[in-house]
Length: 180
Image 1 (tube, helix red, strand yellow):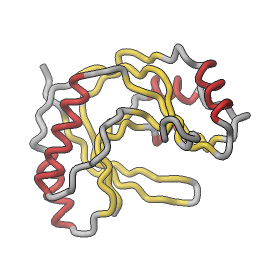
Image 2 (cartoon, one colour):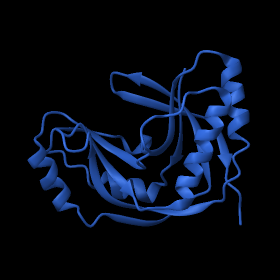
Image 3 (tube, one colour):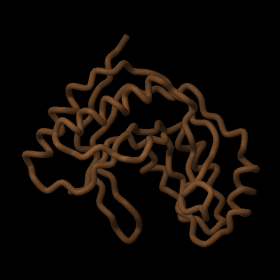
Image 4 (cartoon, helix red, strand yellow):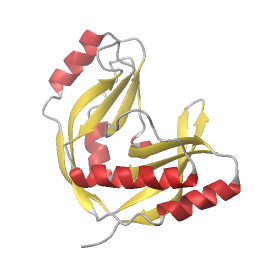
């Protein structure tokens, strides 16, 4: 079972992100139904006991609910030929604290820490051969992207199945954030 932990993106924000998807570009765009903000990718987990321990550890995360703003576009890998186009998140200390709490919960179960620094983003699409120049032109066209006031009241443990049409995400467990 392939697992990850994420924040779901509400419908109004998904619609605005979907509106950016330009069918004239050679990009395999992410389905709006699967748009999310990953807090921690875990990968393959085979043991039922490990999944149960992970759910228990995640249930101890007691960070407060908050709002976030989607702002700007970027791509991975930076400074090289783009492979992934993403929408960024405006700097947000509450988000970073939640991500660190989720990371700590994963470590208590025995998952190795992620060695990459956390860059909060929502994957919009995978590049299929367009040039960096075309990607930058797309960014210039949408440089004022800003979607404010996105409520974050919970996070979700997902299962991800890879198919020929792309990944299918199934929520396994929701974890509520603390109310003020």
